Length: 359
Image (cartoon, rainbow, N blue to C red; front, side, top):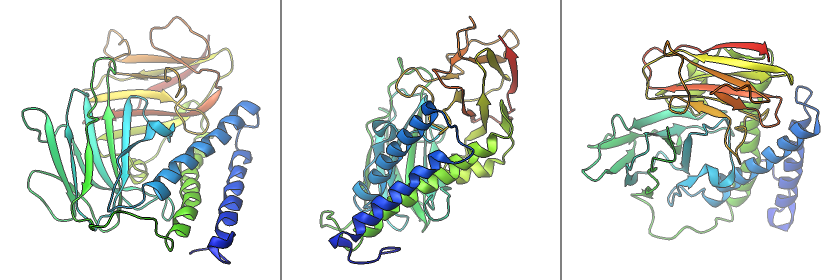
């Protein structure tokens, strides 16, 4: 039981957990972070959301022999998440074998990946295996079955290695009103023990304390990115794609990230070049890398709901008030944060142009 002194079930475990959770609050007060009440309130709320996510991952759904495929959105967790996506994840073990079955339905795009490592120890979720709707084999009714294992399999196979820890399913919508997601998915371990999962009193202290490590690991990744991006406001910050892949991104997605900060009378104009692709979108996040408007209409545009220019490019406008532009992205009371552009299955991605203007 790492870092735990005393007898855990006589109060030492809970005391240490609470002390370390309390210490995480200092992240909101870092010198680089905003000092106003609005951004600090969102920072503390972000910690509560990460706590919920950490408890689901490390305490509730931590047995890889009895995996649970759960929905991020149910816990309002957003770590730079795409608002046009539904995300499902599960904790798994690369030394076991799994079956993921479901139905394709009509969602525009699905990508399914296994990740190795974790944010707690090495700060990475490196790619292990990947399959998407361009390669997924379905039956006549759209049903599919995927085997997850270290050894190659016939049919749909999702590769793992001995360090694989996570399964992530991304469902990408162009128009949620007209598409049905592949929500009918079931994940099961093929070679799990017969006995039902029970709490392991020897393992539980480590599981509970790993929640703190998980939250800190996320803060070290997305928080440090935002602080780095701050040095170049209203622009994309150059980073190699391997950085995004090792943080949990998928190989079909090309990412650009940066930082935005606007005065009340300023607007950010973002021009997306015309490109053949499966999907693209641009979004603004708050300072804590949560999509702006998680509980309302999210502040993002994609290739379906944005109006193009005559030359095929698309210009988006980020501003505090409606400028009368068809591709307005509302800040919803925020004055700064991170921003993301992503494009899927594009052979020659190009960074969008960005310009700050007075309205």
